[in-house]
Amino acid sequence: MLDQIPYLPYVLSAFIGIGLAAATGFRVFLPMFAVSLASYFQWIPTHESFEWLSGLPALITTGVATLAEILAYYIPIVDHLLDTVSVPMATIAGSVLFASQFADLGTFPQWGLALIAGGGTAATISSGFAGIRAASTVTTGGWGNPVVGTTETAGAGIMAVLAMISPVIAAFLAIATVITIVILGKKALRKLIKRNEVLNN
Image (cartoon, rainbow, N blue to C red; front, side, top):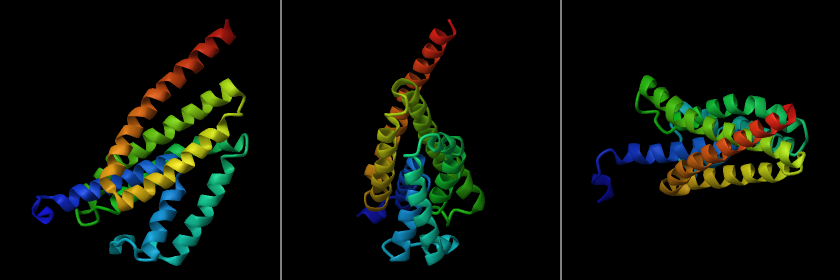
C-alpha cells in the first residue's frame, strides 16, 4: 500500500537527509561516523556516488575526528576556537549527508536541495549552539559549557540514529530543534547585548 504513494521514496529520503543534517548541526563528525559505520556493515544502502563513506578509510577517519571533536569541546578556549569554524563545517557536512540521499535526482537539484535544506538546517543549529555557548561563558564563567557540549553530543547521536531507523520522527525533531534553537539563540543574544550595555555604562 505504501509503495503506491507518489514520490514516497523522495519524501523518506528528505526526512533522512533533514535528520542527518540536523545531527551535523550538533556535532560535525559524529553523524558522518554513524553513517559510515552503518554503511560499512551494510546496515543501510549506499549509493555508488557516496561509496567512499562506506570504506574503511572513511570509517577510521570519521571515528578519530569524532573522538577529537567531542573531547575538544570540554577544553576551555579550544571550544570557542571550534565555534568559529563549526558553522561552515556543519553546513558542508549537512549538505553532503543530505545530498547522499538524493543521488538519483541529478547534480543540480541534488546539491541545490542539499545546500538549502541540509546546509541550512545544519548551519542554523550549529550557530544557535555557538550563541548559547557564548552566553553560557558570559553568565557562568564557562562552567556551564560542558553541559552544553554534552547536550550537543547526545543530540547528534540521537538524531543520527533516528534519521536511519525512524526518519519521520527524526525530521519532526529536526524542525522542532531548529525552532527551539532560533528562540533560545535570540534570548541568548539579547542577554549578551544587555550585559554589554551594562558594562559599557
